[in-house]
Length: 399
Picture 1 (cartoon, rainbow, N blue to C red):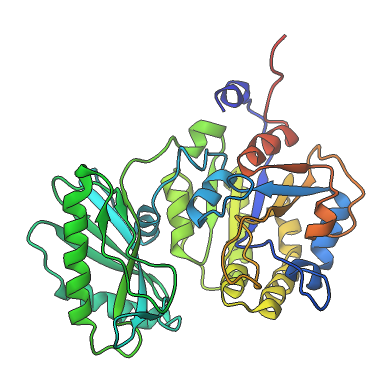
Picture 2: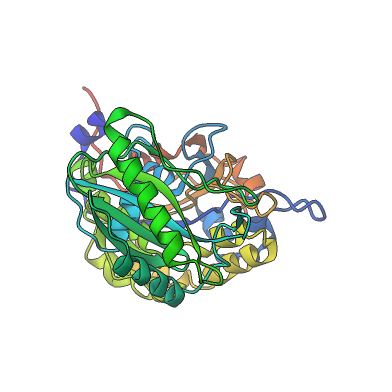
C-alpha cells in the first residue's frame, strides 16, 4: 500500500461501491441456484454484461469474517493487522466520542431462559424503539465504582457500552456464546492489562440482569468485540479520496468514521439511501452504500427474503446511473448463506463496470457466472488499488 500511495495522482475519477451485506450464498438443493442467482436482477445482470466479474475473499480462503474486518478489507486495509473490535465500531456508529481511556463493547440484547441458558441471541429482533427503552434502563441504572459507564442504543436488539477509566484495556473474551441453549460466558481477560476491564464487564452484566429481569424478551446482555481506541491511518491519506458513507445501520457509519470518511445521517430506508447518492457523489470522490437486509435474511435462514431484497435493490439502480459515477463496484463484505444461517468463508461475487474495466463475457451477476469472470479470485483488500487504476488515479510504477 505504500507503493500505491506513492503513485496517487490528481485525476478526478469517481468511484461508487455498493455493498450487499452477506451477499454470497449457497445453492438451493431444489433449484441448484443461490439467492443471488434466484433473484430477478436485470440491472445487475446488465452491468455484468457491460463490465467484468470475479470473486473475492474477505480475509483469506476458509476464514469466516466478521463485518468489521470484512469492511476494512473492502476499504483497502489489512483485515488482520488493522482489525478493530466491534465495540469501537458500534460506539462510533452511535455518535460517541472515544478516548484512550475507553474500552467499548457491542451489546446484543438477548432472551435468557429460567435455567440460565440463552434462548434467543437477538431477543426476537426487538424494534429499535424497544431497544432504546431497554438501553435507557441500563444507562440510568448501572453504577460501577471503578469506571464511568455509557450505554447507547444502536438499532433493534443492538446497543453499545463504553467503559471509561484508568487501567482499562480491550483484550477481553466475548460473553456471547454464539449459540442458544447454553449460558453466556463470563468476561475473561486475555492478558494482564485487561483484568480490570473483565472485572468491570462482569459487574455490568450482573447489574444488567437485575435491572432487566422483568423484561419479556430483552432480559440478558451479551457483550462482543471489546476494544480500545487506536484508529488506523485515514482513508483520504491512504488513497487520496474524499469519501462518504451511506447506511441504515449505525455500525457501518462507525466503520466510515473510524477511517475518516464522512458519514451521512442514518438513513430510514434503502430507497432513502439511493436518493442520497447523487449529492454524495457530487461532493466526494468515493461513496460507499451499504445494504444490510441481505445479511439479516441470511442469518434468519430466509432464502426467499434474501432474494427479494436483492430484487428490491436492483429496481433502484437507475438512481446510480443518474449519479454518473465513473466506476461502479458491486460486491459484499462476506457470504451469509441462508442454508447456514450465519456468516461463512465462501468467496463473494464482485462486479466492476466503467472506467477502463476489461469487459468479459459474463452475462449475469451470480456466483457461478462470477467464478468464470475476468477479475478472477483475489483478496478484498486489493479492490481499492484496482479501482484507483481503473479510473486513472494511479501513475506508472518505475521507469
